Length: 117
Length: 114
Image (cartoon, rainbow over all chains, first blue to last red):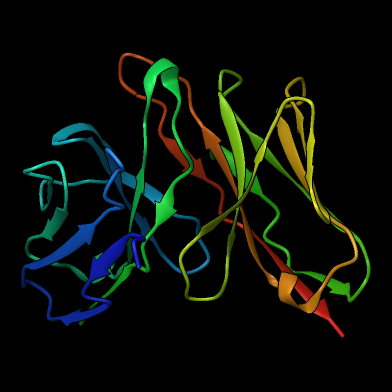
């Protein structure tokens, strides 16, 4: 399967703990996005990378959140000192951005469901 | 005001009927528009892009009205498998602060009944 893969699928953690999620995008895609989705809402943009450069971060991304894409391939999203409000589905997506502003549609991974107790 | 707004539904549709719903967006400079489909507890998947002149993909028709800042999706001859949440997605303009990120609506739930 050459789609976007995310690990783990589910994570249960206690409040105050740190968690890290991984995303492996489609190999030829140069853009990688992180979104967060809670029940009854659409995905909310968190951040995105073009290759290894983090180009934009949402105001939703507090200082407890950090994302990296060190080699322009896989990405990690870390949440420090988790809070119950962090419970959500964390979705990763990738796309291919070309010249002239072209951007292929986003392909999403299955998501990581985080529960903070 | 949210940047992308949708009627959450649910739209209960008898099998074989037609259903249509809209999505409004606030930024008149928005560049691109899409409909994604999301099944319960699954990831969103692209259903179709929305072009200025309107476009069809089988039983699905998408329209864009830039003057009134909304897009629409129409599903003809509804199938049970069309039951899902339909997410409206709008690509914002490129600015000094944004490279045109995609904004999702909260989704419209469609339930097709036998």
